[in-house]
Image (cartoon, rainbow, N blue to C red; front, side, top):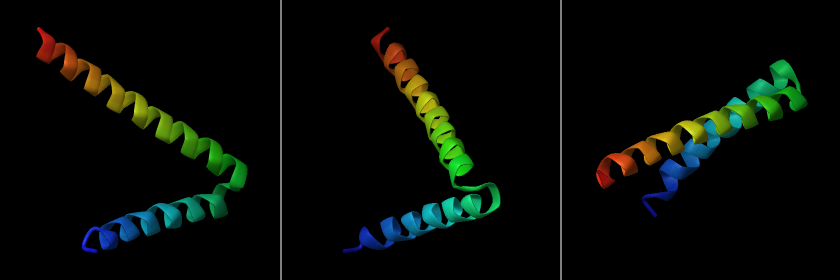
Length: 58
């Protein structure tokens, strides 16, 4: 039960941020910018994981 509160708070923050973006830029631009942002974060996280794995395997 303790983990539910932080997850709910994080979800509320993400939804609020997305709604503000949608109000400022429009829904289509918000979807594209969110997809690009999450994609770039995923690429960054993936490159860090691969770099760490390469370092550990040496």
